[in-house]
Image 1 (cartoon, helix red, strand yellow):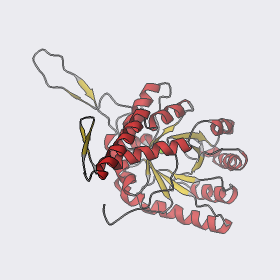
Image 2 (cartoon, protein in one colour; image 1 turned 90 degrees about the horizontal axis):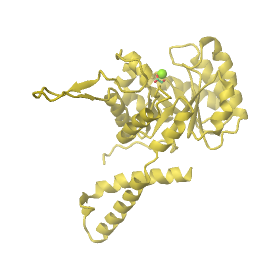
Image 3 (spheres, rainbow, N blue to C red; image 1 turned 180 degrees about the vertical axis):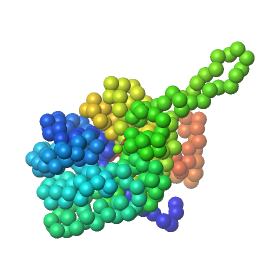
Image 4 (cartoon, rainbow, N blue to C red; image 1 turned 60 degrees about the vertical axis):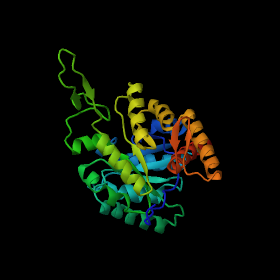
Length: 325
Ligand code: GLV
Ligand code: MG
């Protein structure tokens, strides 16, 4: 290990992150009763400008009055380039109860963006005598944010999670695509000509770099990487595939922009039982190896060593966290 270490963020289950527009209070109760690990009440892009003030009132009322059970409760504020942002922070922190867990900051571009919100949140918290520290979820969804991702990840002790906001990221990088979070047939390679054999088009994942980059920045700084939206909510298999490739890279959760996606996210972001069972066997085998004074042994015909312990421990710890709810 390096001599430089970062604290791990406050542990939370964040497999599914259900987005609920603040301007649609009729959806709040249903969201509270859903199986989502995290609900984010939105003041930003799902809310029209003339609805912002009403959405704030709705959200404050919902935080104070609805029974959210064990869910993590987040409010997505507006971006720092708008005049809504300061009032979002001030009204929510001054008027909402301690039930609020996190604030989600969209379109973070620089570490200073996080610093500015941190300062405002800190002042409001202090003035109100709030005891529970509000955490930050940061959406990386612009080219600038991606370019500054490491500095952003370590910009505040409140930081808990980085999210990949694929829709805005596509807009910011001028990616030639209009779907949200799905694959693109134009991002593909064509196999070489080989006589008369038919050539094949292999689709790639156009978001691979961005997602992998975010996972590295998040993990390097003790934060949870969370994959963003998948727009086609009628395509459950497409969602599963998108979530699975994010989970394989190290993401802990994925957004649900429709209630039907919550169960899919929970399913894919929970380690499969067979993998957990295998991880437990690895730990047992390595414990035996330790007793025998060996650093590496073979299990089912494959080499396992001390690095395998860390992988297995992470998997078992995640399964335990899920079991604890
Ligand atoms: C989320 O905010 C996105 O832009 O994908
Ligand atoms: Mg966005």
